[in-house]
Image (cartoon, rainbow, N blue to C red; front, side, top):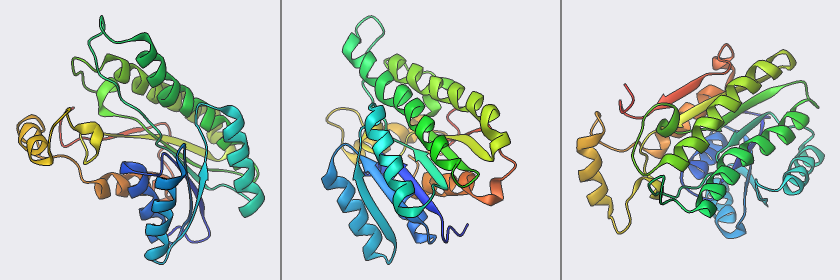
Length: 250
């Protein structure tokens, strides 16, 4: 999976899965642009990439703002001439039973997770048309389309919508050489998989009994899957939702 001469965008690239994905693309010779709302974590990702001999750039952008995304994608095309791969990873989580979840929390998750993915794809598709195609990988979740966990209804709805949107868009744009798929992680080594006040050891003990494989997913495992889905090796994969959750949805 060599990404030499490929230009890659990773939203939500300042931490967690986004940072791991960005580093993995750079380690495979890609040029990676990471975006997010806060500059400091993005610059830290770029420092890690460059320290390992890779190429990276940080651009602040809010995925809920079409104007921000237009500026981001226009800037990538102006600087590099094209966009080859986009990974839409920006996401947020708020928990609460359906009758108790605040409307603002519902709107926040739908705004970032679902509308943010929708708006990102609109501008990424326009950029990919410049060079005749590309690959979009949207980060979904095993929660929503594949499993149910009480207290995560809003998040589940937002991520299930990402899957439905992605599979539909995949059919709309494959004839233009734009391949769209989803990677849906289960519990991974990120703060999102931890309960309030929980330590790494607490999480390991809790999920050890809940996840069939007996552990959370390593960020490198998720990143490897994203790289494969975006690569030419997966060129026949269109509109698929690849679930990586240690057997939780089996």
